[in-house]
Image (cartoon, rainbow, N blue to C red; front, side):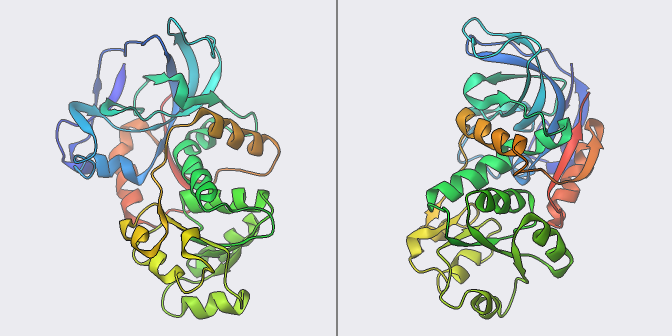
Length: 307
């Protein structure tokens, strides 16, 4: 099979398209013919050694954790799926080597769900990691109907999905973004505010009594800035700032979750959730996709088309 590979922690410069052996299929895995693979910041952080303290990492390494494709073979006990099923998954394993930037990937059934009909292949590939991150963070701080939630980096891949999930739950959402993304956020159902100096005053102008929960999807002090706005600090969650726990909040690391993916797919099929794909590139241009991701200006998702 064709795959993007890196042989060391060289970031985008170390990526190359090459031939690799087809994956083996463990008893509780299925083999997926990849149609598209989502690009996430964690992909290039892995390839720069940023997760080396956390995961056993082996080279040559195929990056990527997001996948959408068609089941080509099933493991001995992977009874949840059949050949020909259209699926999507957050294909993170307990170690790092066999990722989704490839024509084929073997995925544990615990990380896989059926593709929602409402999403095309590119949108489906952009949903798993970002969607589950938002979903699990909102669960952690118990966002529900009647709440006012502040979402930082609301126009990004995780944030734009978090806005839609919170709105679907019946929450009011205030979202931070640059002014060029304010109309985009309004279209998702959020009330936009510009990030940066004076943020607290701008949020207070919309919610004089503060907010019920705050979701930090960017880091850089957003969690600390939320402390004065949230009624109780235990309803602050961050995916990017470990200091949030010192504030009394929660650090969220997304977990593979088939049930969560199914719930996100149900929202998509109900017309309550979509995935905005900002850029689509061919698999061979994975390095360029990473450079675009590192710029931090993406609205929604970057996706690689594989087949």
